[in-house]
Image (cartoon, rainbow over the protein chains, first blue to last red):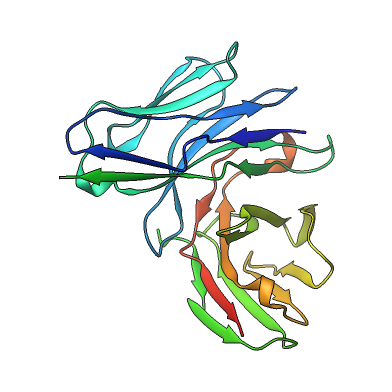
Length: 117
Length: 117
């Protein structure tokens, strides 16, 4: 069964420092990967996606992620974080249980990014 | 375009009651998915509808049901509420037919926070 693992439940970092949020997946079929961000009392907002092609994906707000098939990883990075990046970040894989069903997202448990001044 | 709209934002119910949550997708989006978010279980897929048909269902008891109308608006219903049903319920819409092998990112609403006492 497909799954997503986010090993870090919380990542504290100082403002303007770089950050990496880790995500590993397990899937035996074609992989479609996403990163979403959730600010307090809000829904999820898409940061970036990997469907195919270049393994380095650039998203909104200066975030990027690299798809690594051999390591089954899709880590999210930002070279310099801001206070406003404080939020919960979710990695997700899109899966289809059967050929006649639609795709659904399997989410990781989330990583809380805490940016300190 | 207006985003995904969920009503109400907050609900308080007592055990044994039933509840109906509403979701209006982005204009033109025909796929609507529902997710449950809790601190313990994280984000769990409930079901997905496309053109009034349920195409995918998660592992939730039959007390959880949904439907989609001809204008793509969707409702989900939870009967005989239990304390464990307290959660943030998120609705998401998509602009492509996810069942035809095409992945399209989900656009989430801000959710309905249900508290069962």
